[in-house]
Amino acid sequence: MCGIVGFVGSTNAAPILLNNLEKLEYRGYDSAGISVIENGCIVTKKAKGRIANLKKLTDDGKNVNGCLGIGHTRWATHGEPNDINSHPHESMHGKFAVVHNGIIENYVSIRESLTKKGFKFMSETDTETVTQLLESYYDGNIMDAIVKTLHMIDGSYALGIICNDCTDKFYAVKKDNPLIIGLGDGENYIASDVTALIEHTRKVCYLEDNEIAVISKDSVHIYNLNGEEVEVKVKEIDWNINAAEKGGYPHFMMKEIMEQPKVIRDTVTPRIKNGEVVLDGIELDRYLDTVNKIVITACGSAYHAGFVGKYVLEKLARVPVEVDLASEFRYRDPMINKNSLVIAVSQSGETADTLAALKEAKRRGAKTLAIVNVVSSAIATTADDVIYTWAGPEIAVATTKAYSAQLTVFYLLAIYMARRLGKIDDARNAQLIADLLKLPEKVEKLFEQKTVIQNMASLYFNEKHIFFIGRNLDYASALEGSLKLKEISYIHSEAYAAGELKHGTISLIEEGRLVVAVACQNQLFEKTLSNIREVKARGADIVAIVDESNTVIESETDKVLYIPSTDPLFTASLSVIPMQFFGYYVAAANGCDIDKPRNLAKSVTVE
Ligand code: F6R
Image (cartoon, rainbow, N blue to C red; front, top):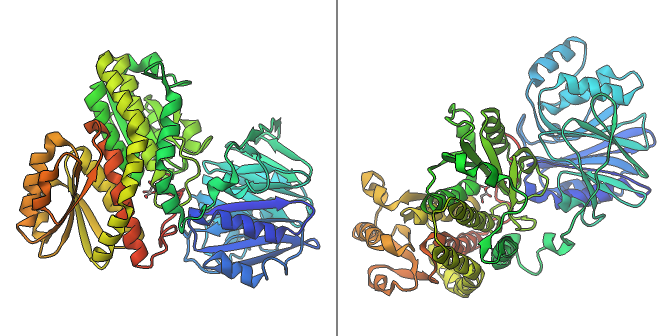
C-alpha cells in the first residue's frame, strides 16, 4: 500500500524514479508522482492511474531534468485518487516536496491552525500538512524544520523530503512504516522495500523509527531526534533479482504457486537437526512452561494460516489457542497477561492492524512471537521473537507461497512445543518430521492436476456465487480457498464450516450452485460426506477435494480432486493447492488483473 522511492546521483533522476516505482506497483496504488529538483526549483509531475500514465506525461522521465528526486505510488485514503491528491505534495511556496506512506492522525487540527496562519492547501490529504509544516518552520535550517515537524505530527509515517535550497541532498524519516536506504556507488536511494533497490545495489540500511537520514550521492548520515548521529547499519540482500521477476510465467501468482515446494523445503530443512525441530535464536524455551494460553493474531490469509496453527498447536502441544483478527483483537480488551503468548503472523511484516495488535499484546505484558516473511520489517523487529518464513519476495497481491510457508512454520512450532512440553513421544515426533519433509514432493505431485483444474475453471468461470465447505482444518483451508477465488476473480464466494450449513446458509443452495467441499481429514470424512449429500440433494454441483484413498466419493460428487496422503494435521498444505489453481484460472478466464486485483494492496499499512 503506497510506495516511496528516492534517488540522488549523477544521472537524470526521473527515469530511475519511474523504474523503481514500477517495482513497487505490486504494493497497490491508484496514482503516482515524482518531484525532481531542476535548476534549483522543484518540478512535480503526477498522474492518476497506472505508472504508464506518468511515464507518458514525462516522456519516460526525459522531460524532467535533475539528479535528485523522490517518487510515490499512492493508494488513496484521505481524498479520492486524482492528480491533486497524488504525492508528492509541494508546500505553498514550492520550498519543500514530500512523499508519505502512513497516516497523519492529527492532520485536521494542524491544517486548521496552518490555514489560520495563511497557508493555502491544495489537496484533501493528510500528507500536505507535513509539507506545509516544514515550510512554516523553515528558517534556512532543514534539519531543524524536520525535527520540529516530527514533534507536531502523530501517526505513522515514512517520509521522503526534498527542499529546493538543497540541491545535493534529500531527507528520509520513518515511524511504524518501512523505509530502506540503498547504498550505491556514487548514488544512493530510498525505497519502501528492497524490490525497488535490488537492481541497483545489494547494500541496504533499514531506517529505524524516529531516525532522520540525510542522503547525498556520496554519503548517508543518520541522526536521532536529538540531532545525534547514529550508526548506518549496512546489510547485504541475499536474494537475487530473478526472485522479483516473472521467470517466464504469465503472472507472479502462477510463479509463486509453483515455487511452493521450494519454499516449504527452505522453511523446514534448516530447522530439522538430528531428527528434532530446532528453532535457533528464539527465547521461547525460556518461558514456554509458563504459557497457559496462545493467541494468534493476523489479517486475511495470514489469519487463515492462524486457524490452521490453532488446530495443529492444540492437537500437538495441548495448549489452548485463540485466533483473532488483528483489527478486532486490539479493541476487545483482550484477556492476556504475562502467561500468554501472542503470535502475530504477517507476510509483509508491515500490516498496520497486526502491528498494532502486537504492540497491544506487549503493552499488556504478553510474550510475543512473530511469523514474518520480510526480514527486519516492523512486525519482525517489534516482537520479542521472530521465526522467518523463507518464502522470498512475494509480488502477487494474492498470497500463495507465503501462506504455505506460514503453515509450515506452525507445523514446526507445534512439533517443537509438543516436544518441549513432553506431549509427543519419539515415534510420533519422527513420523511427523518424516511427513513434513515429504510435503514438498506431495505439493509437486498436485501440480499434475493443473490442466484438469483449468478445464474445471472453464466450466464455472461465469458463476455468481460459489461456496466452500469443510470441517476443522478443512474449514480453515476452505476459508483460504474462498478468499483466493473472490479476491482475484471478483466472484462472490463464502466458506462455511460444513456442519453449520443447515443453520441458515443452506437456503442459498439451488440448482447448479457450485460447492467446493474440502474433506481431506479421514477421521471427519463421513461427517463432511453427510453435508455433501445435503447440498447435493438440493441441486448443488459438488467439487470434492479428498485424500487419495477416498475413491468412494466419486459416485456422490460431480468432480473429485485427490490430494496425496499425509498426516491429517498437514492436509491444509495440500488441499489449498487445487483451490489456488482454481482461483487463478477462474480469474484468468474472466480476464481479471490477477497480480493486481482492483482496490487491493499488497501491504496494508493503514488501519
Ligand atoms: C490475501 C492476502 C491478504 C493478506 C493480508 C495480511 O491473498 O494476501 O489477505 O494475507 O492482507 O497481509 P500480511 O500477511 O502482509 O500481514
